[in-house]
Length: 441
Image 1: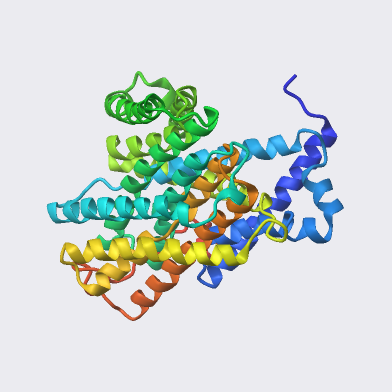
Image 2 (image 1 turned 180 degrees about the vertical axis):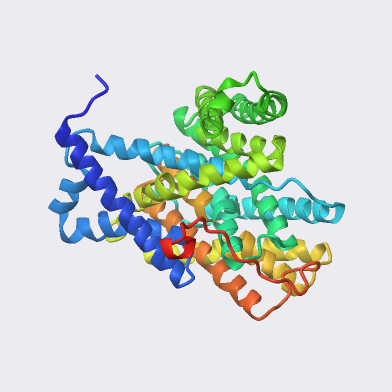
């Protein structure tokens, strides 16, 4: 009970070590040529997975990653932990301080970037032939929701990493984009919860099903936020909280796991619990405590769990046998133009200049981590098949690449990101790397 043989442990550690090393190596190489690290981490799975190693050396791939009966389940467990840690870190990026003008801009972008893009994505499902891409649930309605979400979603982790790498995290532009992405994605996660509920309900859709799914999701979000805010605010930094005193990080991880478990038991996606745990911690705790928590979580998450998660996504892709490049190109152009135009028009409607509107359109078009999470959850729920899973993952990766390149050009040429960011000076990033012995002496 609760045990593996010595040979199984050794084999799993070898496979995980190879995957982790490849993820860090290709992630580092990607950063060196100004590509978001997540692209390199997913590429690690492509190299060691069915796309390359499994295609040319299928026996080697099966031996490494399917070497014993439960090895795939162990990777599946790490994959889920990485997903939860990614969402927890995303919640800790949530922005809380805004002036009236910033609230107005953020609110307009949340509405203007979400609703039109979602609606266009919904009707686009009738234009594209989605039947060949249906998953095992065989539910066109659930897939239409997933397609609409894939058009409208934005990435907090990747766009935050881009801002950090460029040294512009302190700007007004970065604050508004990250806040917009946060509200944006919470709304879309509710829609995803509805889609998975339909898929798990045997495809039966009624008004009662819709009200129950959306009601439970919103009830969980509001109830968790209100109660969690009170508990975090009043019960965290007190002498009687022995768990917090014994381990600050352990205390918050316990909260995250409990909220995720509660979400799962309520048939809400577990990622909601992790995301809300991060948001509540960011909002309720003193700044010094939330920053220390974010640093501690980031150290363990971005060194192990999150790279393994993205690399495992790559392991599930087979771009040789399950990828239609022409369909992907059409879908990519459609999704990118829809999201960018929606944001641009909204920004111009609230009297932002052309360059600001274009910058916002490009930045909010970054799908990154949440785009990959969307594809993972939809694939696991049987809403989409492996081929469409690959389409959504590649869409998330390419749309993560574009903002980094464009914003780097803007900063290098010293163009204005938006009003209030005139003559900004990029700040050196804190990448958390350990100094060498010679540097530290």
